[in-house]
Image 1: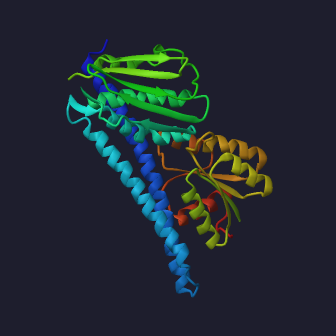
Image 2 (image 1 turned 120 degrees about the horizontal axis):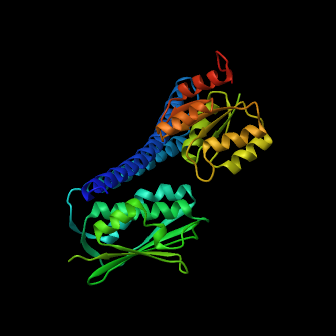
Image 3 (image 1 turned 180 degrees about the vertical axis):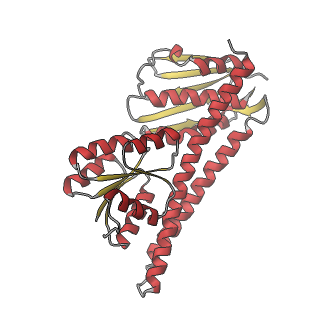
Length: 219
Length: 122
């Protein structure tokens, strides 16, 4: 059995790799659109030099596309930056709402590829807990990844953070899933390790199709 | 020269189609496999440029299905993913595999290669 520190490193590296790869792919997609629109402007310039008329409306649309993709890439980089900084400290007091929003943003495209939307319902008040933010993001990511991969239908996966005195709760509900009948279906390898590291518990309500992650508030 | 472009990023595939049109090609675009099949039902294409990672049906699977309808169609894969596994699969499919972003000149050169022509005539 590997020592915990080895499992932490292995799990963390795998998570970091997955998030980085997905973010890189998304940034590439935004750059590809920027590239084509810039190329189109270049094409219009060449045509104008040969006497063809320029259409202001069309050029305006190209400019709009460029700005939209710059904003998109900027948002991805911002999220990756926030994710990277979550590893700064082994333990800190964080708002579960913000953690959930970040992981949902990082997973959005993965979900979209399966015709799923991630909807984060947040309480008006922060849901604070003292924990290892990086490990928690990893755990939520793995749960979402599993749900997304096994979803049988299109739809919405809802994430709701709920606060309490001694513990906090994350509810994840969505379309029916293949091969998921209990929390045990999730508790493999990395998930089991992370649950232990975070002193967290996972429950699955088959009737409500709801995954419940209970975490100590640690305050 | 008829080109079919399939990518789930509409702003990418629509702009690329416009750029091909400006160069005298006849380029149609689709953001999903269903629309790609509709195009292929109406017209025969010389080459299809497919994104690898798409919702529901990815590029490699789409190629297989399009090939059934149009055995003579050639294929180029285009992706932002860049994983070693995808590159190996792409190359083993026997067609060309390019990483985004790429230049339209590179795309035209690649179309030339897959069609086995020295000069690409629209």
